[in-house]
Amino acid sequence: MFTKDMKMADLIHKNYLLLSIISRFGIPLGFGDKSVEEVCNDYKVNTYFFLDIVNSCSYESYFTDVQHKHFSIVSIVSYLRKTHKFYNDQIVPEIQCLITNLYQNCFQQKDNVKLLFNFFEEYKNELLIHIKREEDIVYPYVLDIEKAYETKKISKELTEQMKNYSIKDYLNEHSDIEEKLLDLKNLIIKYLPPTSDFKYRNKVLVKLFQLEKDVNDHSSIEEKVMAPKIFDMENFLFSHFSIVKLNIDDE
Amino acid sequence: MMSKLKFIIADKSFLVRRGLVCTIEEFESFEVVRELDNEKSLFKAIAKLSPDFVIINLNFYKSLRLKEFNSLTKKNKTKIIKLIDKNKDDVFFNETDYYIDINDSKSNIINQIKDITEQFLKSEKTSKNSILSNREKDVLRHIALGLTNKEVADKLFISIHTVVSHRKNITKKLDIHTVSGLTIYAILNKIIDIESSKS
Ligand SMILES: [Fe+2]
Ligand SMILES: [Fe+2]
Image (cartoon, rainbow over all chains, first blue to last red; front, top):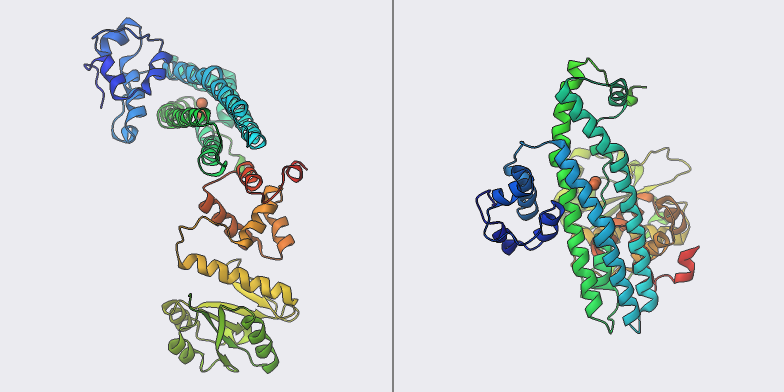
């Protein structure tokens, strides 16, 4: 497991997939032999939050074993937003571009590669909708909850909102966005007949594996870090302000 | 060579039994090992022959000591197919029950038997084989064209339950989980063509 006294450079040597994650924190390369804590302080990043993220991306059982709580919803949401941005602006366009290259470079299977391109487009749209819902509704809500919890003041709007929507509903509706990715991988590995092009077919796959892992890690931060914190704060607010949740099932 | 699937048929009517024997023995891999015109000797026959299937008249079935019967069939891994008369028998079926309606057409009865035995064979050997059976290809074709489970069931004259279980097997064999993924698989394997997938 990674700790605050380790060298930042060693993290990347251990798990190079952390590269894109470290960039999301706004930390550039070139940190010499500085420790994790020193680098985090240099760039005003919460060390504990940083460690939770890099550990959870590197050790599967991390969230069930240990977890720090010394960081705010503000920092979580800001990281989650940066991750969304990484999907939208970087890795998704990269994959589209690679599939296009694959299309241009193969002589047979063109029609079939086109199908895969469209399939990925479908996935992209699903992902966009998922992200938009979180950025427009869920993240603003959790930020409001944290604010109300800290100031012990609650607005009328938020009271109303809490009656109808809580983080539990988010967990229930939080959809599985990895299924299509899994399918696409299998279609390329197992079912698309051999192509004359090896290079782009492999590159597409490597990127798909990366995206899949990142989406998985991202979802566990939403579900296992953000949601439980909000759940506790909500419970406090429900009792402190005597808010009663409307139960739609009772109608 | 695979050994044949063994059937016992229990019904009072000679004609019904003969009809069933003929239908079942049309399948090369099936064999009827005993015909019974009453339920009394059924326990003995199952214990002795340990058949894979017992096709039993619903009234016979109702008069059995069920607890004993169930433990015996469980021990021998025998599956029960109830023989019903939809015009007379007023019954509600569990989707998991196997049954044959004596009023059904020949092709329906054959399909029904095929489905039941296919499910049985699948549960028997946990096959690593990823090749789809013809029946599964039929189901896949319709799913890929966008039909719902109910519509597929109606088209193929099988129960929704059977469609669902085929779907599970298809997904497990292919490791493809979404409908659009299945559609592409179906096109790549020429189970459907691109044009029909658009409609
Ligand atoms: Fe998200
Ligand atoms: Fe999400």
